Length: 89
Image 1: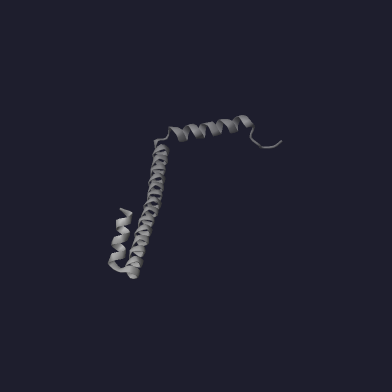
Image 2: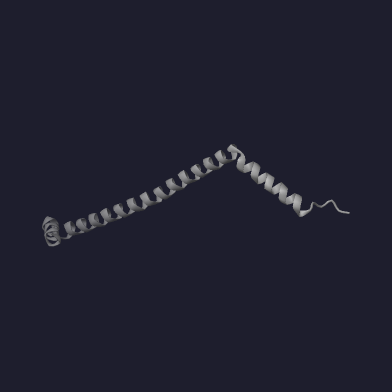
């Protein structure tokens, strides 16, 4: 004869464990605290990625325009820069 539990006592033990965990306010509080912490960290990480992508784009555009105007100024002086601005407007 073996001492293996039958399926019915196992099911009862699992049901009792789940009912105890669900009924415990400490379980719910710990779960909500973990969820809030995860959500906050995820939001900060996503906002950080979005923010740095935007900054990278703005800085890249600004450097591109600066290079363009410096090249125009180097090649043709103020006249070339003003002529470019007049054409763009």
